[in-house]
Amino acid sequence: MIDLMMTDEVRTALDEGAPVLALESTIISHGMPYPQNVSMAREVEAIVRDHGVVPATIAVLDGVPRIGLDDDGLELLGSGEGSIRKVSIRDLPYVIARCEHGATTVAATMRLASLAGIRVFTTGGLGGVHRGASATFDISADLTELSLTAVTVISAGVKSILDIGLTLEMLETLGVPVLGYRTDDFPAFYTRTSGYAVPLRVESASEIAALMKAKDDLGINGGISVANPIPESDEIGHERIDAIIDQALGDLDRLGITGKDTTPYLLGRIVEITGGDSLVANIALVKNNAVLGAAIATEFAGLSAR
Ligand code: PSU
Ligand code: MN
Image (tube, rainbow, N blue to C red; front, side, top):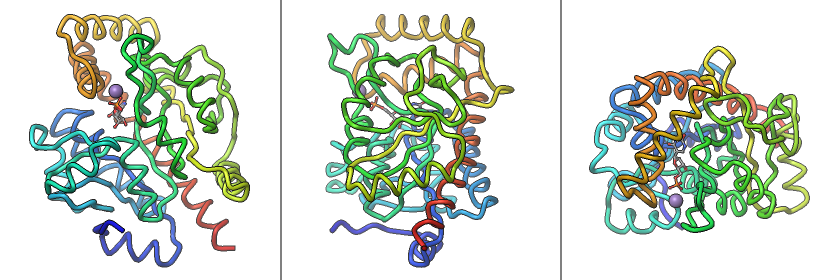
């Protein structure tokens, strides 16, 4: 088994069966500008602690998978963009073997969380099927990982830089429960609605924990996607964000950017075009997801203790 380096706080909580919530690091290194990314990471950890749950931000530093980071670790991830590789599943063995730093995507964070024994994980947005994927085959490994690894991932849905309809179809094919938290409409990150119906609606964290347990008891592999809409007060309207996303996608095409650089480029470009408004929304929805993630981790720890 690979050696994982855990903070004392995380190790103690896991030993005691106390709730732990995993947090991802690509969102820090490649999803937001410095220094807002580092303050976001610190604030999210504080929110999780305020809810009585131990936060475990996950990344690879000097080739060592880290489960829980100290302040210096967060600062390094946030400020060292060029030297920090974006690490999805396929990249994990590479950065570990080469003793490099890596910021983990949803897929890679899920896998490391699961190896550590953590079952609940909060992020901003999920990767998915990119627009035009019928030609490019660009489908995030986040989706395949959700079919394999038993971690519940709380996100604000899927950005319309992706093909939301195809992403939902793919999740159905992969057997992944997609739960809308108090919503009938699948959220689209900056907006509370996408126009696509949410496959399964839930009302509470305890309902989600019960569903996790039922899935375990059935022996069904894989994770769960919980879609939690951005708070109304932080939403960016459809009229505005749709046009901006189209503009950013046009710029992407013109520059010929493809593959793993696609999502980081689009996120950065959207921040530029909105004059920072998209960043404010992004930070708000991550905090909102952390609150729900902490509640689910608490409920699931309660069920497991019985
Ligand atoms: N969506 C966001 N912010 C992000 C990402 C997605 O709103 O930071 C990141 C996540 O780490 C996600 C990854 O796992 O992008 C997906 O990248 P790719 O499509 O290359 O798999
Ligand atoms: Mn991709």
